[in-house]
Length: 511
Ligand SMILES: *[C@@H]1O[C@H](CO)[C@@H](O)[C@H](O)[C@H]1NC(C)=O
Ligand SMILES: CC(=O)N[C@H]1CO[C@H](CO)[C@@H](O)[C@@H]1O
Picture (cartoon, rainbow, N blue to C red):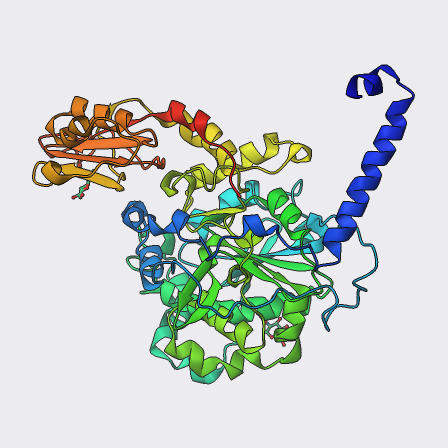
């Protein structure tokens, strides 16, 4: 039948028509169930599996050069392994705040950079260090129009064509008298004394106004309010921080799956005080529908939550809490695969690559350095998005794999799934794929034994060894090595790490 089909060329246009028709009908079927259609039942696990990429990220914060970020990460508790039972229903295209008729056939509309506003947040104490790289990459005109970008800081500045908005300029007098707000009031003095705040290693805490980071929490509500008032025609408001990178073309395609007139608040899940919210550093997207349902309804929203802001520590949490008060639910609380992965609270070198995220698109990285941003931008520019989104595996191949070694000394040991030491080896139960228990239990004896144990475990991807300790993991994390001449090379023995990177060839897409 197939062969006959190919032999008869006249059948081909007919076949294409038939296929188009099937896809059309298929889409129609999906479309009737929601803005996007339900994810097939098989793709939805019983509970939200959202912890995998993030539970491991904490040990890495020490690499990060800024104390503010560390504080921010630590103050957000670890990601819950499951969301409480009350799972909201995703808004459907027939919901009240959407004019579209659920029975009409609407093919997905392309979301372009002209449909979004990028809300870029920085601060006076880090601006000169972190913003210039973005002007050459994230904010370049071949990517997004100047008019679709709003740069927010806590001190007004101008860089070339860019005016940076002091988003705290209209802060009420009662907040101004707060202790936490002092760094803002001191900035004028620093400026008038020709002081270079960004010379400090830690934002605001050495040469700059003490505790510049303290101002951060005050910025979130005014940013979102200002963006919505000043860019009322935007369909999406995308937030990013100065040490983040957003793969904009990837994210735009993702947003096509949602109706901007509905209320959507999409990002990487964090939680505090029982509020689920989008972690700020990972970036997030807020639909115009969500904005109208919250900030649009209440021009005094910043004042209204002034006390709440004073009493809480993280701006991203404060925003999430406020949105929730207006009925805007956080995306990942919906139990659907399309909300999982994508927005990342760490950078590619401190993220676990594994089968579960291997084929998922990447929307953002956080804790990026200027060098990372430049490389992400180059990768994005070289990518043909017509062929599909940039996925974890693509970032891995371009920016992680080239640095992996089969064995290397003086490299950080992030492996943690299994640890065999001289004192626990005797009773160590190997994973089921290990045939020889002896090989597993002698892993602690030497570098070679550790490597052999890893090889004996079919899922093992990386190992590291020190003294009498062998650690192994089934996921890959790059981390960073300690270069020659670095003062951390003081210990008498080096950590030795190795990757079985050829095993990624066995990884398949999941979900
Ligand atoms: C502060 O208020 C002025 C005057 O109303 C307004 O033009 C400006 O946009 C406001 N700034 C912010 C950041 O909201
Ligand atoms: C180089 C490095 O990061 N070494 C760490 C390995 O893990 C142990 C704890 O398991 C730490 O104490 C080391 O600092």
